[in-house]
Length: 53
Image 1 (tube, rainbow, N blue to C red):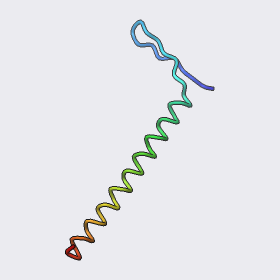
Image 2: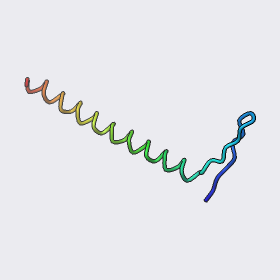
Image 3: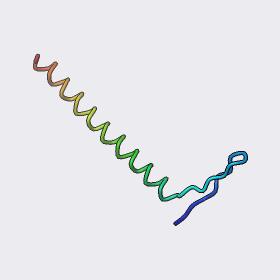
Image 4: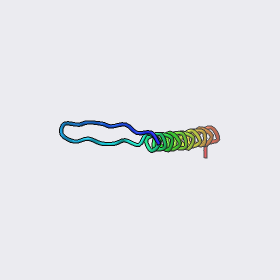
């Protein structure tokens, strides 16, 4: 387990680096999945305009 200390004024925090990495991976997965959905929706709308539906 790796961690580091963050000092903010009189407060200090111990940050778990593995937890931060997991949160970043989850955020990236969500970003990618929402991007794929948006691209699929754009393709579908283009097809609807092309066919006049």
